[in-house]
Image 1 (cartoon, rainbow, N blue to C red):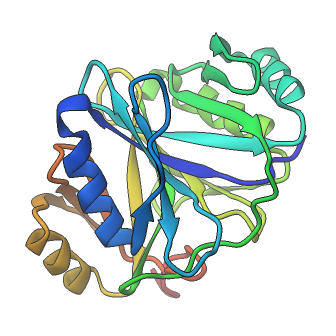
Image 2: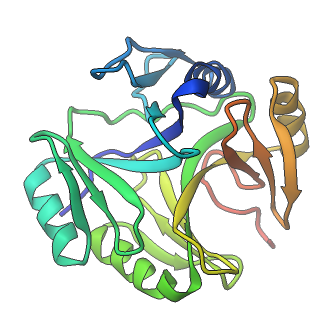
Image 3: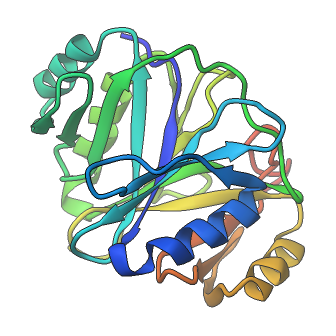
Length: 247
């Protein structure tokens, strides 16, 4: 079962939805589509150059929000059945859209592929190209096994540190997955990662737009966007997604 495209969803509270849209359109060099949904809670970030979108913003009714993945496929039913057989459960079946939870509790969706194939370009030296799944230690190995089995055409690789595992998609797909083993037992969550040619320059620009710094790591810095959501700037190649040689 192969995935044909990937979307990263920016999930933010209803009250901060407009702020999230304003911020993420600027940092990704995109414009907003028409709003969709019964409560106008969905919007797509459309690349300026006409390539296919790979980022959407969703207003969530409760909780702080976060991020999730959406997998356009040829056969939604087959993909959902495969996920269930591997331990996922269906949260909502809307016919052409199925919402599921992974064994660790991470939400993800599948929908029909509509011909998307053209990856958006690097913008301002960065690219939103990764969803990081933050997994409690007791569920980490099972979660790595689940995603590796669900996405057999993706390359499953150990990360740069023992607490990371990378799922690298086929070259045409725009969003990859990083699994991170948390240092404590708490519910699974997810956040967005941007690959940056120059973290300092990108951070300065994001702070100018209203983001606030939270923490620094070996190859990354954690920020909070104006809508309150955490995300990371990472020192990876925006074209390939990989770390610099020697890292």
